[in-house]
Image (cartoon, rainbow, N blue to C red; front, side, top):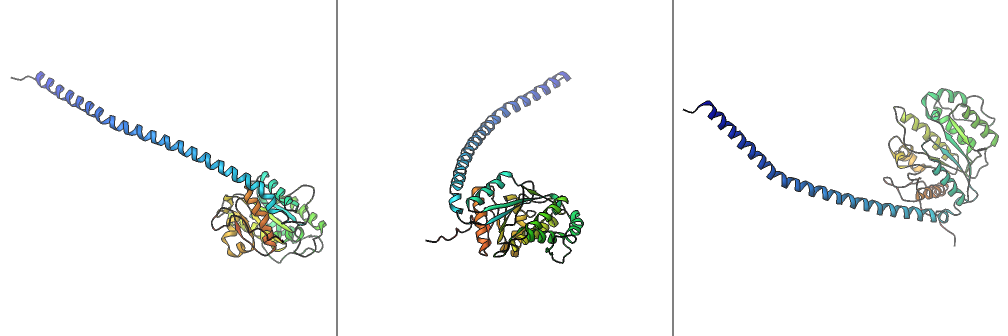
Length: 314
């Protein structure tokens, strides 16, 4: 008669056999899988090295292109702004000082001068500033200054700044005293700041921007900037808005201008001002504005790399 111990030993033997089979089978299966994983890792490492090499090569090409553009920039823009003045308007703190300096330098190499720089503060486009700005613009303006009958503070201030800071094409320059008074008043309201000793009237305007607005009031803030750009363009020989790729988004100034066919046809935009090519485009676009031609330049969708070069006389 088979006793309980026999059954117990038999069950243990069965379980040991099963466990041993699993171990042996797993080991046999794991080796091919491990070999396959090691092969994939090796392939990925090779791909990574190849991508690094490709990135370095592309960066070298980009650096060479940038260096070439910077070298030929003075020759390309030479004489395009002879005896002309340009006002720089900086829309936000994200615009780098390097971009401001590089654009200013190229304006000089084109034969022009920078008449001054104004930097807009966040309060300029803040809807909460509207009442204070309307109150200022509609009372106590310098003699001879008129503004349109409107309830839009952005339109009123834009028209006021354009009237005192821009010289109409073929017309006389505005009174410098009025410009000083208006800038002092708006500075006191903390909506803008004047850079340098003074800001004089100019033939052209370059509006430098970067990124886009965030928040529920982004559309209102952009509308205020658009009013300013439109006013500067209408009151002068032309205005160009130059920024970065981020400013071409839905909440960026360039994006808003390009999305509107009427605005896009009136004001030139450049979306790569941080590069030598973008700065060349910015300066050349001013010449196009003087001839009534506006364009979209840079690397964004539906853009031209650079504006047409001005015709040269033999």
